[in-house]
Amino acid sequence: MTQHHFVACTYARHAQAIVDIFNEAIVTSTALYDYQPRTLQSMAPWFATKEHSNFPVIGVEDEDGTLLAFGSYGTFRAYPAFKYTVEHSVYVHQDHRGQGLGLAVMQALIAAARKQQMHAMVGAIDAANASSIALHTRLGFAQVGTIPQVGFKFGRWLDLALYQSLLATPEHPVDG
Image (cartoon, rainbow, N blue to C red; front, side, top):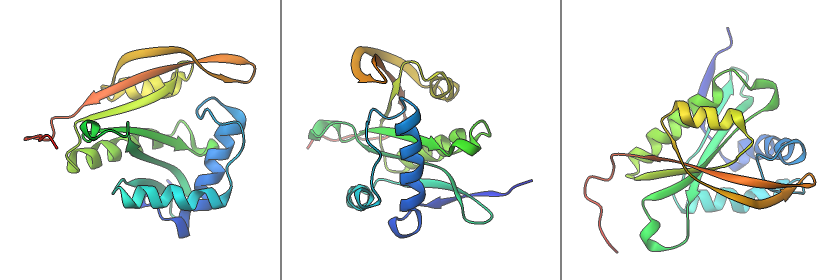
């Protein structure tokens, strides 16, 4: 049985593996509404933004230190009143899907969001991504809307489904 463990992903150690996972999703799926693969250099500002905002990048590695899956969250919308809401994403390496890694990463992200006193987690999922929708539903996320035909990729219009989970945090939210 392969042993897996959680890690806090860093640019130095994980940028290449993350960009490889991103790029496979870009080229083969509608999990990302990008057209062009990302460069390794594009990961430096991505990691810097996560670090500056104190947003986690949580990975799962095997016993050899190979990154199998990762997830993160970030700013939902750049207005102060959204400070308790984050938008998350989870990606699993193509060779390791269907093994519960996405579930494990999502559970770790939910725990991190609670610890950081977030209130709402939002997943923006391609409406045809049945596996991601099933994962979110299993974790108690509710579909709160669908935005029809907001993406165009692979010669077709794409609908974006929004899934949300409300956390019992923070206990004492404040304005400002």
